[in-house]
Image (cartoon, rainbow, N blue to C red; front, side, top):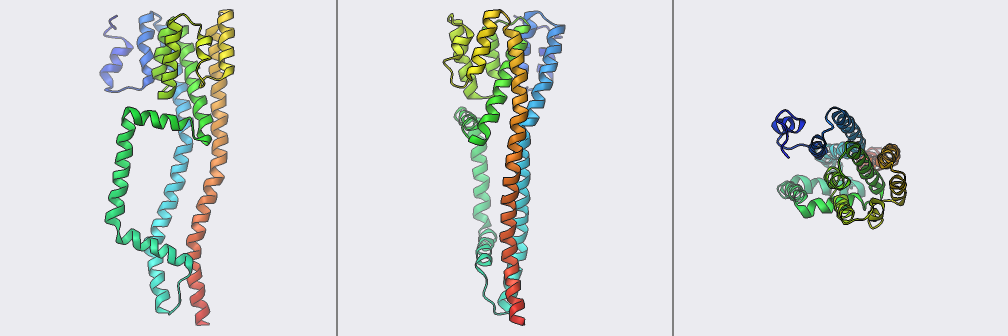
Length: 294
């Protein structure tokens, strides 16, 4: 079916070369014929999706900030402070403490072999970036999101929230359940969940109920399966999915807040330990010098 030249889809395709997966189901909405109401639902869904995305990104950005701060402090100390201090201690005829020797050795490696480790880091980053663009790389990193203990719970709830939210919006707009599943598979933005939803869509197309098809996928929790089953029996599947979406959005908020609360003290302790090592490598030689002078 052709899309109108003044439709949302046409405008998006004119404006953007690549657009987020969330816009894919706009095509199905316009085909369904529900124009004004559907566009309101789409706008509301996009706002909620952006909100969840920003919540999801809080932890990585915080962690990167702490790590970057620590690396900056380490770089300044290793490159400028420790070498000068070692020269001063050597002039006084004092022996360097163990901490200072270790940091000084690291300083000599970083400053003396920069032509090895800087290209090495660049090559590693480039390899990871290229690997993430491949089908195998996408699958690997998406699997890691669902396997790492501290992130598994949050990412699972984020994807379940997207699943329930998008299914509710599309079913409300008159899209068939099979098309809704296929489109949601693209919107959920995870290769593992995409494969699971494609499998569910295939089974539903073969005549299975949605709840029965979900039972074969370990990624779908039992509470969602039971709620979908109730929705099918009562004819209120859209209403059930809407409530599931609200439930998982609250769960995402709570999980992210808990994870941030857990990571913050761990990162602060790690940063404090690193700074403590640096301080020990600086203060112990100064103490030895002052003791020798006395």
